[in-house]
Image (cartoon, rainbow, N blue to C red; front, side, top):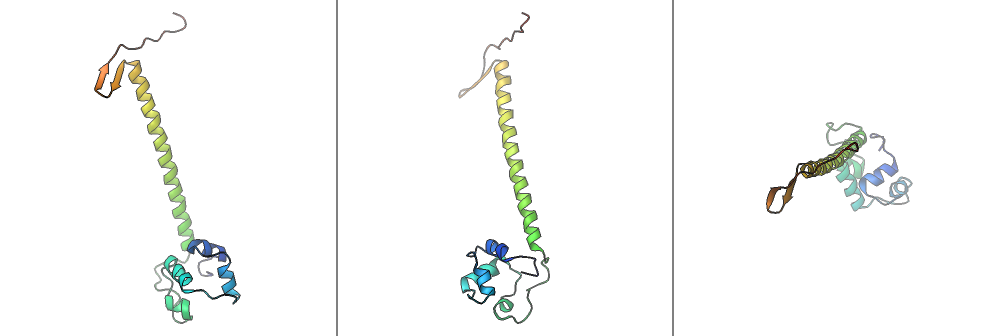
Length: 130
């Protein structure tokens, strides 16, 4: 946790653990069970299983992972949020375009029915001066 700059709460949330479990284990009030250890190893894949269980060997399986993967996770979450926002904006723009096409077609007298495109008399717009 220190290596990655994480606190108990971040690990609890990241791994889907019970609230307070990490703190109790630190204080020696609880042991981390097999399921908890599996969740931690699943979330932090570069963490060496033997080191976590015994304290022996290297902490990490490989040095390819950046020490601040939490920052990478935050960047990924920001990108996902931006993509969602863009998708919503695009859907809204497409909806507006569809409505505008409908208005233009009505102005030009085009009637789109289930049988195809039919031309109807165009609407005449009068100004207030007429």
